[in-house]
Image (cartoon, rainbow over all chains, first blue to last red):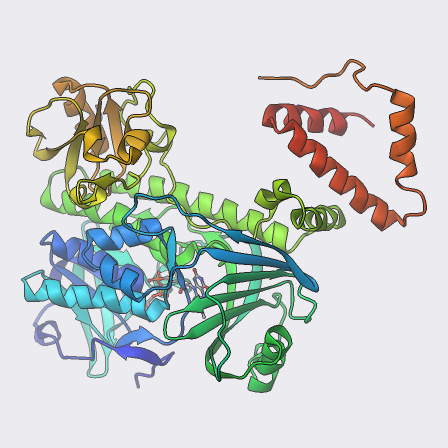
Length: 542
Length: 64
Ligand SMILES: Cc1cc2nc3c(=O)[nH]c(=O)nc-3n(C[C@H](O)[C@H](O)[C@H](O)COP(=O)(O)OP(=O)(O)OC[C@H]3O[C@@H](n4cnc5c(N)ncnc54)[C@H](O)[C@@H]3O)c2cc1C
């Protein structure tokens, strides 16, 4: 028997018998990905676009129902843009700038995010996770049509694995029975409860805190115009737990998250009358239709290492954080961004296998930053001591009349990409007067460039970005080519390019990695220095 | 990096102290604690400089 554990929003990869199932001995694949959630499919897309054959095994036939992760941040959209699926997300998504903060009975203040200009993508969009995933799968289909060697196998459940020195063997169950395949590299993108972690007996450490959220997607009925705003309610007087969050989504759907504590009776809370009781108390006199609801329980955890020999973990399988700050799917996409080019280089023989250890090094650093941020938000939202509660309420009571207290209000800090400060792939930072935000290790901020944007001209390979200075068209160091992208501060009359990349300097040379992170920077081109930095950034030592 | 002023710096120390105490007249312990918290936040914002704030917190922590 092969039963679904959840119902589907989109059935996109129905079960089909694969030739591997009729092979006499297990067929070997360069890369197998276990799990076809957003992270697994995006990883397949990254590798497939590099021409690397990749097989995704998922135990369902498509994308699960329910909004789940709804807030997709700029960096995540930029990564999707690099893969060619950012624009449909932006078109479908809701952009909002006005937020309101409430405490107990009423509103404390209202804010406008006043986003920074000069970026192709906004700070974030609201989009139900199934759409986000569907746009990635659509892009996979498009890439496949052009020859990208990606296979998505639905109803292929991985039941066990055996590790060997240079490959992994997987036992798979399908509606037609079992079969085996082998993988040079296996990626575990099988979600928060990762069966793969269990099969390998690996720890999932943490439990900084744990909580549950009752999530409801609703459609408003009648004339009432509900605004496109984010409402965050601390200690709501409508008695719905520690916090309540209201968000607008596409399709005239609103999402409401009630934080209801860890020890709850899930069955009882999930009864429609109980969900409606909370919703009615929160929304007042409006009519609505319930679209989807769920209870989301989480703990703050991460694996000690994301690489274990021939197996790499990514997304929720590797780390889990609270939903405050929308760091779940967003940070998973940054895992993909980081892993894709490194694994590609290792498979092509352009970099040593140890480059993959830096995937773990960098993304563990990212996971820790996410856990730190969501822990701080949770401590503000759910104070753990009396003193903490007193200070939290003091901040909220001052925030209404006094602007100074507002930066202290923490209902989740929006996911921003982490900077790989001080980590092993970093080269020299020798741009005197260079801006802090583009220091070595940072992900490149976007900026206007002519009729388009800077980031659209970076990425996929190594690049030498020169600003108002000369350099050769390309440099090849030990099989790795870095191509020049030449720009001038004058290409952006708004001055953003200069402010973000030159600072007080009058010229700059940036070595940029395939994932658009800064590997090294100087004020002029020096061939020896570039060659050494390329080696360092590929894990070959200087 | 600035440092915390630990030499006498308050004009009219007696007057300031009396007002500090008077503020709490008739308040419950919880309301007093809340008032102190608000006052600390106002003062902290006025100072702004993290190194000064950190040092002030250390001084307070090490005393008493
Ligand atoms: C109810 C709910 C609410 C959420 N709310 C939020 C939110 O508000 N904000 C937020 O940021 N995040 C939220 N999340 C988390 C967000 O959905 C995840 O961060 C995101 O889906 C992670 O993607 P992933 O690809 O790593 O894992 P998943 O999306 O979990 O994908 C894992 C995939 O692996 C498959 N799989 C599992 N075992 C096997 C196996 N043995 N063989 C083959 N395939 C297997 C699964 O079927 C699934 O398709 C929520 C999650 C849930 C479940």
